[in-house]
Length: 158
Image (cartoon, rainbow, N blue to C red; front, side, top):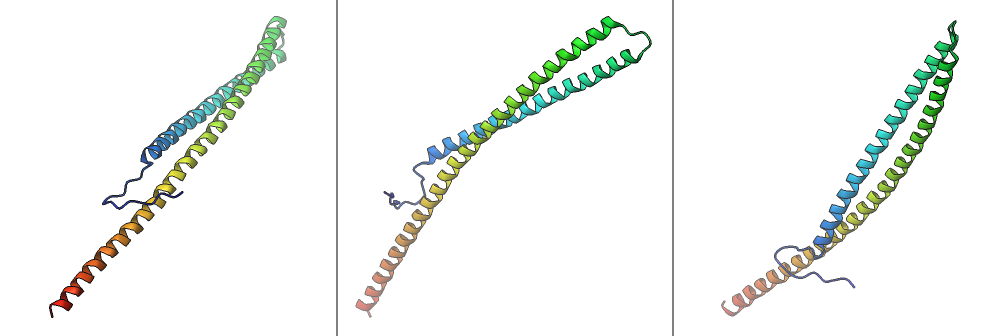
C-alpha cells in the first residue's frame, strides 16, 4: 500500500533514521572487512617468514652435511628443528586460510549492508520524485486558480 506524499515546503523522508542506521551499519561492516583483510595479509607475512626460515635452516643443514666432519648431534638437532618448523608452517597455513574465510564472510556481510542501504536510497529517491510531482501539480493548480481569478476579474470589469 503506497503512502501518498503530503504537501509541504520541504521534502522529508519518513525513513531517514532507518537510512542513517543502514549507512552506519555499512560503514561498520566496511571497517570489519578492512580489518579482516589486514589480518589475512599479516598471516601471509608470518607464513612467508616461517618458510624463509625453513629454507635458511635447510641450507645450513646441507652445509653441515657436506662438510668433512659430520656432527651427528647437530644434524639430528637441525632435523628436529626443521620438522618442528614444518609443523609451525602447517599451523600458519591453517591460520591464514581461516583468516581468509573470515574475510570472505565479512565481505558477504558488507555486500548485504550495502544492498540494504541502496534499497533505502532508491526508496527515498522514489518518494522524493512522488513528492516533487505532487508539488508541481499543486503549483500548477495554484497558478490555474490565480489565472482563473484574473480572467473572471477582467470579464466582470471591462
